[in-house]
Image (cartoon, rainbow, N blue to C red; front, side, top):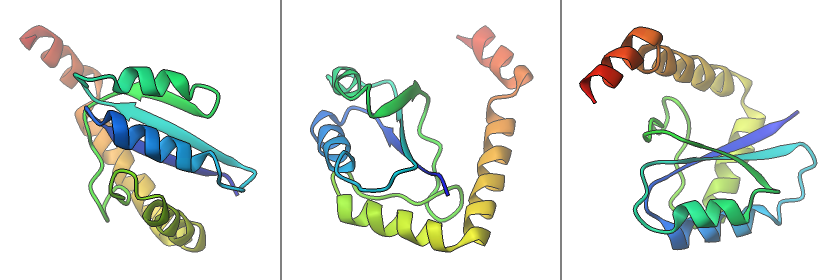
Length: 122
């Protein structure tokens, strides 16, 4: 089973580095890390660049809602992150529920009409 973790971050250079460094030591073979960096005003972009071999990255406003679209771990809490990942590995129904909720959130916030309105309002 492939496991992906998504880290939503915004202006958290130190904790982003700590989280990414911790993930480097996981011994899972089919594992990916996706970093969604908000409009950071510090050096978080540079930290994300440092880990390009480990992660995929993107930019987006923070959309994760704990227990609805995913789980949230405190910045730098590698043990908490591992606990949530292991819980998801064991619970197919929760994975499916989070995926459906995330898709609904994405489709309602990032469809063509909404994005066109945001662009015009900009």
